[in-house]
Image 1 (cartoon, helix red, strand yellow):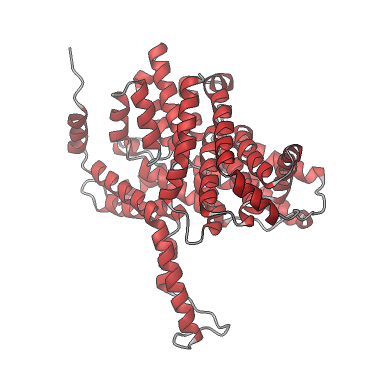
Image 2 (cartoon, rainbow, N blue to C red):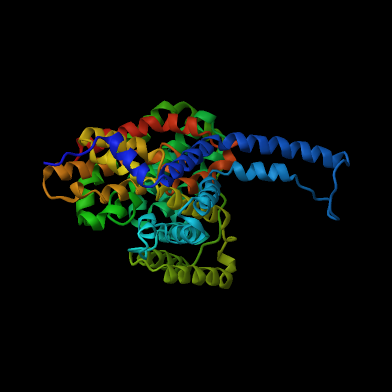
Length: 480
Protein backbone atom coordinates (compact mmCIF):
# COMPACT_ATOMS: atom_id res chain seq x y z
CA UNK A 1 0.00 0.00 0.00
CA UNK A 2 1.59 3.36 -1.00
CA UNK A 3 2.34 5.79 1.76
CA UNK A 4 2.00 9.56 1.66
CA UNK A 5 5.42 11.24 1.88
CA UNK A 6 6.02 13.56 4.80
CA UNK A 7 5.53 17.27 4.24
CA UNK A 8 9.20 18.23 3.90
CA UNK A 9 9.86 15.36 1.48
CA UNK A 10 6.93 16.44 -0.68
CA UNK A 11 8.02 20.09 -0.67
CA UNK A 12 11.62 19.12 -1.48
CA UNK A 13 10.41 17.01 -4.39
CA UNK A 14 8.34 19.92 -5.73
CA UNK A 15 11.41 22.18 -5.59
CA UNK A 16 13.56 19.50 -7.23
CA UNK A 17 11.12 19.29 -10.14
CA UNK A 18 10.81 23.06 -10.51
CA UNK A 19 13.26 25.22 -8.60
CA UNK A 20 11.49 28.38 -9.73
CA UNK A 21 8.69 27.65 -7.22
CA UNK A 22 11.06 28.39 -4.34
CA UNK A 23 12.22 31.61 -5.99
CA UNK A 24 8.60 32.66 -6.56
CA UNK A 25 7.80 32.08 -2.89
CA UNK A 26 10.87 34.12 -1.98
CA UNK A 27 9.55 37.03 -4.06
CA UNK A 28 6.16 36.60 -2.40
CA UNK A 29 7.77 36.71 1.07
CA UNK A 30 9.63 39.90 0.15
CA UNK A 31 6.38 41.44 -1.09
CA UNK A 32 4.74 40.65 2.26
CA UNK A 33 7.66 42.20 4.16
CA UNK A 34 7.42 45.25 1.90
CA UNK A 35 3.68 45.55 2.66
CA UNK A 36 4.43 45.62 6.38
CA UNK A 37 7.24 48.15 5.86
CA UNK A 38 5.16 50.45 3.64
CA UNK A 39 4.50 53.02 6.41
CA UNK A 40 8.27 53.49 6.80
CA UNK A 41 8.58 54.35 3.10
CA UNK A 42 5.62 56.74 3.42
CA UNK A 43 7.30 58.48 6.36
CA UNK A 44 10.56 58.78 4.42
CA UNK A 45 8.65 60.24 1.46
CA UNK A 46 7.04 62.84 3.73
CA UNK A 47 10.41 63.94 5.10
CA UNK A 48 11.98 64.12 1.63
CA UNK A 49 9.05 66.16 0.35
CA UNK A 50 9.35 68.61 3.27
CA UNK A 51 13.08 69.00 2.61
CA UNK A 52 12.45 69.57 -1.09
CA UNK A 53 9.80 72.22 -0.43
CA UNK A 54 12.22 73.99 1.89
CA UNK A 55 14.80 73.96 -0.90
CA UNK A 56 12.18 75.41 -3.28
CA UNK A 57 11.46 78.27 -0.88
CA UNK A 58 15.19 79.01 -0.60
CA UNK A 59 15.64 78.95 -4.37
CA UNK A 60 18.10 76.04 -4.34
CA UNK A 61 16.20 73.84 -6.83
CA UNK A 62 14.73 74.49 -10.27
CA UNK A 63 11.01 75.16 -10.71
CA UNK A 64 8.79 75.48 -13.78
CA UNK A 65 6.99 78.63 -14.95
CA UNK A 66 4.20 77.94 -12.41
CA UNK A 67 6.64 77.63 -9.53
CA UNK A 68 6.19 73.84 -9.31
CA UNK A 69 8.90 71.34 -8.51
CA UNK A 70 9.03 67.79 -7.18
CA UNK A 71 11.57 65.43 -5.73
CA UNK A 72 12.15 62.22 -7.69
CA UNK A 73 13.34 60.46 -4.54
CA UNK A 74 10.22 61.55 -2.65
CA UNK A 75 8.00 60.34 -5.50
CA UNK A 76 9.77 56.98 -5.47
CA UNK A 77 9.33 56.67 -1.71
CA UNK A 78 5.63 57.57 -2.09
CA UNK A 79 5.25 54.76 -4.63
CA UNK A 80 7.02 52.25 -2.37
CA UNK A 81 4.84 53.42 0.52
CA UNK A 82 1.55 52.68 -1.29
CA UNK A 83 0.41 49.34 0.15
CA UNK A 84 -1.95 48.91 -2.78
CA UNK A 85 1.00 49.11 -5.21
CA UNK A 86 3.26 46.63 -3.41
CA UNK A 87 2.18 43.37 -5.04
CA UNK A 88 1.93 44.96 -8.46
CA UNK A 89 5.51 46.23 -8.16
CA UNK A 90 6.84 42.85 -7.07
CA UNK A 91 5.06 41.27 -10.02
CA UNK A 92 7.61 43.02 -12.24
CA UNK A 93 10.38 41.37 -10.21
CA UNK A 94 8.73 37.99 -10.65
CA UNK A 95 8.32 38.64 -14.38
CA UNK A 96 12.02 39.47 -14.69
CA UNK A 97 12.94 36.26 -12.87
CA UNK A 98 10.69 34.23 -15.17
CA UNK A 99 12.32 35.78 -18.23
CA UNK A 100 15.85 35.08 -16.91
CA UNK A 101 15.15 31.60 -15.45
CA UNK A 102 16.61 28.70 -17.47
CA UNK A 103 13.84 26.87 -19.30
CA UNK A 104 11.27 29.67 -18.86
CA UNK A 105 11.99 32.76 -20.94
CA UNK A 106 10.04 35.64 -22.42
CA UNK A 107 7.18 33.68 -23.97
CA UNK A 108 6.61 31.63 -20.82
CA UNK A 109 6.64 34.75 -18.62
CA UNK A 110 4.17 36.57 -20.87
CA UNK A 111 1.75 33.64 -21.02
CA UNK A 112 1.80 33.20 -17.24
CA UNK A 113 1.26 36.88 -16.43
CA UNK A 114 -1.53 37.05 -19.01
CA UNK A 115 -3.37 33.96 -17.76
CA UNK A 116 -2.33 33.59 -14.11
CA UNK A 117 -2.40 29.80 -14.67
CA UNK A 118 1.10 28.48 -14.02
CA UNK A 119 0.23 24.79 -14.28
CA UNK A 120 -1.41 25.23 -17.70
CA UNK A 121 1.52 27.26 -19.04
CA UNK A 122 4.00 24.74 -17.65
CA UNK A 123 2.13 21.93 -19.39
CA UNK A 124 2.02 23.91 -22.62
CA UNK A 125 -1.78 23.89 -22.56
CA UNK A 126 -4.16 26.83 -22.88
CA UNK A 127 -5.46 28.21 -19.59
CA UNK A 128 -8.49 26.26 -18.38
CA UNK A 129 -11.54 28.07 -17.06
CA UNK A 130 -12.22 31.79 -16.78
CA UNK A 131 -9.45 34.38 -16.63
CA UNK A 132 -7.85 34.79 -13.21
CA UNK A 133 -8.04 38.57 -13.69
CA UNK A 134 -11.84 38.82 -13.83
CA UNK A 135 -12.01 39.45 -10.07
CA UNK A 136 -9.51 42.36 -10.05
CA UNK A 137 -11.44 43.91 -12.94
CA UNK A 138 -14.72 43.39 -11.09
CA UNK A 139 -13.38 44.97 -7.90
CA UNK A 140 -12.14 48.02 -9.85
CA UNK A 141 -15.52 48.50 -11.56
CA UNK A 142 -17.77 47.81 -8.56
CA UNK A 143 -15.69 50.16 -6.38
CA UNK A 144 -16.06 52.90 -8.97
CA UNK A 145 -19.83 52.38 -9.19
CA UNK A 146 -20.33 52.10 -5.42
CA UNK A 147 -18.56 55.41 -4.76
CA UNK A 148 -20.99 57.34 -7.00
CA UNK A 149 -22.97 60.05 -5.28
CA UNK A 150 -26.47 58.57 -5.86
CA UNK A 151 -25.41 55.21 -4.37
CA UNK A 152 -23.70 56.86 -1.41
CA UNK A 153 -26.71 59.11 -0.82
CA UNK A 154 -29.03 56.09 -0.78
CA UNK A 155 -26.76 54.19 1.60
CA UNK A 156 -26.44 57.22 3.88
CA UNK A 157 -30.24 57.61 4.00
CA UNK A 158 -30.82 53.93 4.77
CA UNK A 159 -28.14 53.66 7.44
CA UNK A 160 -28.95 57.13 8.78
CA UNK A 161 -32.57 56.08 9.26
CA UNK A 162 -31.52 53.13 11.39
CA UNK A 163 -29.09 55.32 13.36
CA UNK A 164 -31.91 57.83 13.96
CA UNK A 165 -33.93 55.05 15.58
CA UNK A 166 -30.98 54.48 17.96
CA UNK A 167 -30.61 58.14 18.90
CA UNK A 168 -28.64 59.45 15.90
CA UNK A 169 -25.50 60.16 17.93
CA UNK A 170 -21.90 59.47 16.95
CA UNK A 171 -21.96 56.10 18.71
CA UNK A 172 -25.21 55.13 16.97
CA UNK A 173 -23.89 56.03 13.50
CA UNK A 174 -20.58 54.28 14.21
CA UNK A 175 -22.37 51.12 15.34
CA UNK A 176 -24.87 51.10 12.46
CA UNK A 177 -22.24 51.63 9.74
CA UNK A 178 -20.01 48.90 11.16
CA UNK A 179 -22.97 46.50 11.44
CA UNK A 180 -25.22 47.05 8.44
CA UNK A 181 -22.68 48.01 5.77
CA UNK A 182 -20.83 44.65 6.13
CA UNK A 183 -24.10 42.70 6.10
CA UNK A 184 -25.22 44.57 2.98
CA UNK A 185 -22.10 43.12 1.41
CA UNK A 186 -23.94 39.82 1.06
CA UNK A 187 -26.24 41.54 -1.44
CA UNK A 188 -24.13 44.23 -3.12
CA UNK A 189 -20.80 42.31 -2.80
CA UNK A 190 -17.99 42.93 -0.33
CA UNK A 191 -15.99 45.45 -2.43
CA UNK A 192 -19.06 47.68 -2.77
CA UNK A 193 -19.85 47.34 0.95
CA UNK A 194 -16.25 48.24 1.84
CA UNK A 195 -16.35 51.33 -0.36
CA UNK A 196 -19.65 52.53 1.09
CA UNK A 197 -18.71 51.73 4.69
CA UNK A 198 -15.30 53.40 4.46
CA UNK A 199 -16.65 56.54 2.79
CA UNK A 200 -19.42 56.90 5.39
CA UNK A 201 -16.97 56.35 8.26
CA UNK A 202 -14.59 58.89 6.75
CA UNK A 203 -17.27 61.58 6.54
CA UNK A 204 -19.27 60.83 9.69
CA UNK A 205 -16.66 59.47 12.10
CA UNK A 206 -12.99 59.92 11.19
CA UNK A 207 -13.62 63.59 10.38
CA UNK A 208 -14.24 64.08 14.13
CA UNK A 209 -10.57 63.28 14.88
CA UNK A 210 -10.88 60.24 17.18
CA UNK A 211 -7.83 58.92 19.05
CA UNK A 212 -5.33 56.66 17.30
CA UNK A 213 -6.56 53.71 19.35
CA UNK A 214 -10.15 54.22 18.22
CA UNK A 215 -9.06 54.83 14.63
CA UNK A 216 -7.30 51.46 14.49
CA UNK A 217 -10.06 49.66 16.39
CA UNK A 218 -12.63 50.99 13.90
CA UNK A 219 -10.51 50.05 10.88
CA UNK A 220 -9.95 46.55 12.28
CA UNK A 221 -13.69 46.11 12.91
CA UNK A 222 -14.47 47.29 9.38
CA UNK A 223 -12.03 44.81 7.83
CA UNK A 224 -13.11 41.80 9.90
CA UNK A 225 -16.82 42.59 9.63
CA UNK A 226 -16.66 43.01 5.86
CA UNK A 227 -14.84 39.69 5.56
CA UNK A 228 -17.48 37.75 7.50
CA UNK A 229 -20.44 39.92 6.45
CA UNK A 230 -20.45 38.53 2.93
CA UNK A 231 -21.09 35.01 4.21
CA UNK A 232 -24.88 35.17 4.00
CA UNK A 233 -24.99 34.36 0.26
CA UNK A 234 -22.91 32.29 -2.17
CA UNK A 235 -21.91 35.12 -4.54
CA UNK A 236 -20.67 38.07 -2.45
CA UNK A 237 -17.59 36.94 -0.47
CA UNK A 238 -14.60 36.03 -2.71
CA UNK A 239 -13.51 33.06 -0.53
CA UNK A 240 -17.01 31.56 -0.83
CA UNK A 241 -17.28 32.31 -4.55
CA UNK A 242 -14.10 30.26 -5.07
CA UNK A 243 -15.65 27.07 -3.64
CA UNK A 244 -19.43 27.41 -4.01
CA UNK A 245 -19.57 25.95 -7.51
CA UNK A 246 -16.95 23.28 -6.83
CA UNK A 247 -18.69 22.05 -3.67
CA UNK A 248 -22.26 22.66 -4.84
CA UNK A 249 -23.16 25.29 -2.23
CA UNK A 250 -26.35 27.29 -2.73
CA UNK A 251 -27.13 30.52 -0.87
CA UNK A 252 -29.26 28.48 1.55
CA UNK A 253 -26.28 26.18 2.23
CA UNK A 254 -23.93 29.11 2.84
CA UNK A 255 -26.38 30.83 5.19
CA UNK A 256 -26.96 27.61 7.10
CA UNK A 257 -23.21 27.09 7.57
CA UNK A 258 -22.12 30.68 8.23
CA UNK A 259 -25.02 33.16 8.19
CA UNK A 260 -26.13 33.32 11.81
CA UNK A 261 -22.53 32.96 12.99
CA UNK A 262 -21.48 35.93 10.83
CA UNK A 263 -24.32 38.13 12.08
CA UNK A 264 -23.59 37.21 15.69
CA UNK A 265 -19.85 37.81 15.31
CA UNK A 266 -20.38 41.30 13.85
CA UNK A 267 -22.83 42.37 16.56
CA UNK A 268 -20.74 40.95 19.43
CA UNK A 269 -17.49 42.50 18.18
CA UNK A 270 -19.11 45.91 17.66
CA UNK A 271 -20.74 45.85 21.09
CA UNK A 272 -17.42 44.86 22.69
CA UNK A 273 -15.54 47.80 21.20
CA UNK A 274 -18.52 50.09 21.82
CA UNK A 275 -18.21 49.32 25.54
CA UNK A 276 -14.43 49.79 25.47
CA UNK A 277 -14.66 53.21 23.77
CA UNK A 278 -18.03 54.42 25.07
CA UNK A 279 -16.41 57.35 26.90
CA UNK A 280 -14.52 58.64 23.86
CA UNK A 281 -17.51 58.16 21.57
CA UNK A 282 -19.56 60.26 23.95
CA UNK A 283 -16.90 63.00 23.92
CA UNK A 284 -16.79 62.98 20.12
CA UNK A 285 -20.49 63.81 20.13
CA UNK A 286 -19.56 67.36 21.17
CA UNK A 287 -17.50 67.76 17.98
CA UNK A 288 -20.19 66.35 15.71
CA UNK A 289 -21.94 68.74 13.38
CA UNK A 290 -25.08 68.18 11.40
CA UNK A 291 -24.31 66.68 8.03
CA UNK A 292 -24.76 69.15 5.17
CA UNK A 293 -28.00 68.62 3.31
CA UNK A 294 -27.81 68.16 -0.42
CA UNK A 295 -30.55 68.49 -2.99
CA UNK A 296 -32.53 65.33 -3.51
CA UNK A 297 -31.45 62.99 -6.29
CA UNK A 298 -34.23 61.75 -8.60
CA UNK A 299 -35.24 58.16 -8.05
CA UNK A 300 -34.62 57.24 -11.68
CA UNK A 301 -30.99 58.37 -11.44
CA UNK A 302 -30.40 56.15 -8.40
CA UNK A 303 -32.18 53.24 -10.09
CA UNK A 304 -29.87 53.49 -13.11
CA UNK A 305 -26.83 53.31 -10.83
CA UNK A 306 -28.22 50.31 -8.97
CA UNK A 307 -29.03 48.51 -12.23
CA UNK A 308 -25.46 49.05 -13.41
CA UNK A 309 -24.20 47.49 -10.17
CA UNK A 310 -26.54 44.52 -10.65
CA UNK A 311 -25.27 44.21 -14.24
CA UNK A 312 -21.67 44.16 -13.02
CA UNK A 313 -22.38 41.43 -10.45
CA UNK A 314 -24.26 39.38 -13.07
CA UNK A 315 -21.37 39.66 -15.53
CA UNK A 316 -18.97 38.53 -12.82
CA UNK A 317 -21.12 35.44 -12.22
CA UNK A 318 -21.08 34.76 -15.96
CA UNK A 319 -17.35 35.50 -16.28
CA UNK A 320 -17.94 38.09 -19.02
CA UNK A 321 -15.26 40.79 -18.56
CA UNK A 322 -15.99 42.53 -21.87
CA UNK A 323 -19.65 43.08 -20.98
CA UNK A 324 -18.58 44.09 -17.47
CA UNK A 325 -16.31 46.74 -18.97
CA UNK A 326 -19.18 47.83 -21.20
CA UNK A 327 -21.23 48.51 -18.08
CA UNK A 328 -18.45 50.74 -16.78
CA UNK A 329 -18.46 52.72 -20.03
CA UNK A 330 -22.22 53.18 -19.75
CA UNK A 331 -21.73 54.40 -16.17
CA UNK A 332 -19.12 56.96 -17.24
CA UNK A 333 -21.37 58.20 -20.03
CA UNK A 334 -24.33 58.45 -17.66
CA UNK A 335 -22.37 60.52 -15.13
CA UNK A 336 -21.38 62.93 -17.91
CA UNK A 337 -25.02 63.20 -18.97
CA UNK A 338 -26.29 63.89 -15.42
CA UNK A 339 -23.60 66.17 -13.88
CA UNK A 340 -26.02 67.99 -11.57
CA UNK A 341 -26.51 64.80 -9.53
CA UNK A 342 -22.95 63.47 -9.70
CA UNK A 343 -19.61 63.99 -7.99
CA UNK A 344 -16.30 63.60 -9.85
CA UNK A 345 -15.71 59.91 -10.58
CA UNK A 346 -13.22 58.42 -8.11
CA UNK A 347 -10.72 56.30 -10.05
CA UNK A 348 -7.43 56.50 -8.14
CA UNK A 349 -8.49 54.20 -5.28
CA UNK A 350 -10.16 51.58 -7.51
CA UNK A 351 -7.19 51.58 -9.90
CA UNK A 352 -4.72 51.01 -7.06
CA UNK A 353 -6.83 48.22 -5.60
CA UNK A 354 -7.22 46.57 -9.01
CA UNK A 355 -3.43 46.77 -9.45
CA UNK A 356 -2.98 45.24 -6.00
CA UNK A 357 -5.29 42.31 -6.75
CA UNK A 358 -3.82 41.67 -10.17
CA UNK A 359 -0.39 41.47 -8.54
CA UNK A 360 -1.73 39.15 -5.87
CA UNK A 361 -3.16 36.86 -8.57
CA UNK A 362 0.24 36.62 -10.26
CA UNK A 363 2.27 36.15 -7.07
CA UNK A 364 -0.30 34.06 -5.19
CA UNK A 365 -0.82 31.74 -8.16
CA UNK A 366 2.64 30.28 -7.52
CA UNK A 367 2.13 29.44 -3.83
CA UNK A 368 -0.04 26.34 -4.19
CA UNK A 369 3.01 24.03 -4.14
CA UNK A 370 3.38 24.55 -0.38
CA UNK A 371 -0.13 25.60 0.71
CA UNK A 372 -1.97 22.56 -0.68
CA UNK A 373 0.27 19.94 1.00
CA UNK A 374 -0.11 21.79 4.31
CA UNK A 375 -3.91 21.78 4.03
CA UNK A 376 -4.04 18.06 3.21
CA UNK A 377 -2.31 17.07 6.45
CA UNK A 378 -4.53 18.88 8.96
CA UNK A 379 -7.53 17.89 11.06
CA UNK A 380 -10.54 20.19 11.49
CA UNK A 381 -9.22 22.26 14.39
CA UNK A 382 -5.74 22.60 12.98
CA UNK A 383 -7.12 23.43 9.53
CA UNK A 384 -9.25 26.22 10.99
CA UNK A 385 -6.22 27.70 12.79
CA UNK A 386 -3.87 27.36 9.81
CA UNK A 387 -6.45 28.75 7.38
CA UNK A 388 -6.91 31.80 9.63
CA UNK A 389 -3.14 32.28 9.90
CA UNK A 390 -2.34 31.76 6.21
CA UNK A 391 -5.08 34.20 5.25
CA UNK A 392 -2.98 36.93 6.88
CA UNK A 393 -0.26 36.40 4.28
CA UNK A 394 -2.31 35.48 1.23
CA UNK A 395 -5.71 36.64 0.07
CA UNK A 396 -8.42 34.50 1.69
CA UNK A 397 -9.92 33.74 -1.73
CA UNK A 398 -6.59 32.20 -2.74
CA UNK A 399 -6.67 29.97 0.35
CA UNK A 400 -10.13 28.59 -0.40
CA UNK A 401 -9.33 28.32 -4.12
CA UNK A 402 -6.38 26.08 -3.30
CA UNK A 403 -8.51 24.11 -0.84
CA UNK A 404 -11.07 23.50 -3.58
CA UNK A 405 -8.36 21.75 -5.59
CA UNK A 406 -7.82 19.13 -2.84
CA UNK A 407 -9.87 16.04 -3.83
CA UNK A 408 -10.35 14.88 -0.23
CA UNK A 409 -12.27 18.05 0.61
CA UNK A 410 -14.75 17.53 -2.24
CA UNK A 411 -15.67 14.02 -1.10
CA UNK A 412 -19.09 13.37 0.49
CA UNK A 413 -19.42 12.58 4.17
CA UNK A 414 -19.31 14.36 7.54
CA UNK A 415 -15.49 14.38 7.79
CA UNK A 416 -15.00 16.18 4.47
CA UNK A 417 -17.86 18.55 5.33
CA UNK A 418 -16.19 19.45 8.62
CA UNK A 419 -12.91 20.15 6.83
CA UNK A 420 -14.67 22.30 4.21
CA UNK A 421 -16.36 24.28 6.98
CA UNK A 422 -13.05 24.76 8.80
CA UNK A 423 -11.05 26.07 5.85
CA UNK A 424 -13.73 28.56 4.77
CA UNK A 425 -14.45 29.67 8.35
CA UNK A 426 -10.76 30.34 8.91
CA UNK A 427 -10.48 32.28 5.65
CA UNK A 428 -13.51 34.42 6.55
CA UNK A 429 -12.43 35.06 10.16
CA UNK A 430 -8.83 35.93 9.25
CA UNK A 431 -9.79 38.34 6.48
CA UNK A 432 -9.27 41.43 8.64
CA UNK A 433 -5.86 40.73 10.16
CA UNK A 434 -3.89 42.44 7.39
CA UNK A 435 -4.54 44.60 4.35
CA UNK A 436 -3.71 41.69 2.01
CA UNK A 437 -5.96 39.18 3.80
CA UNK A 438 -9.16 40.07 1.94
CA UNK A 439 -9.60 41.55 -1.53
CA UNK A 440 -11.71 44.60 -0.44
CA UNK A 441 -9.31 45.65 2.36
CA UNK A 442 -7.03 47.77 0.15
CA UNK A 443 -10.13 49.72 -0.91
CA UNK A 444 -10.92 50.58 2.70
CA UNK A 445 -7.32 51.52 3.45
CA UNK A 446 -7.11 53.67 0.32
CA UNK A 447 -10.17 55.66 1.42
CA UNK A 448 -9.24 55.98 5.12
CA UNK A 449 -5.44 56.28 4.90
CA UNK A 450 -5.50 60.14 4.91
CA UNK A 451 -6.82 59.97 8.50
CA UNK A 452 -3.74 58.03 9.67
CA UNK A 453 -0.98 60.59 9.17
CA UNK A 454 2.07 58.73 7.87
CA UNK A 455 0.02 55.66 6.95
CA UNK A 456 -1.69 52.66 8.48
CA UNK A 457 0.61 50.55 10.66
CA UNK A 458 0.14 46.84 9.78
CA UNK A 459 1.19 45.83 13.30
CA UNK A 460 -1.37 48.03 15.06
CA UNK A 461 -4.06 46.96 12.62
CA UNK A 462 -3.33 43.28 13.32
CA UNK A 463 -3.32 43.91 17.08
CA UNK A 464 -6.75 45.55 17.09
CA UNK A 465 -8.11 42.90 14.72
CA UNK A 466 -7.26 40.03 17.08
CA UNK A 467 -10.40 40.39 19.23
CA UNK A 468 -12.98 40.51 16.40
CA UNK A 469 -11.09 37.70 14.63
CA UNK A 470 -11.27 35.55 17.77
CA UNK A 471 -14.97 36.35 18.14
CA UNK A 472 -15.60 35.31 14.54
CA UNK A 473 -13.69 32.06 14.99
CA UNK A 474 -15.67 31.29 18.15
CA UNK A 475 -19.00 31.99 16.42
CA UNK A 476 -18.12 29.85 13.40
CA UNK A 477 -17.20 26.98 15.73
CA UNK A 478 -20.25 27.14 18.00
CA UNK A 479 -23.01 28.37 15.64
CA UNK A 480 -23.01 25.89 12.75
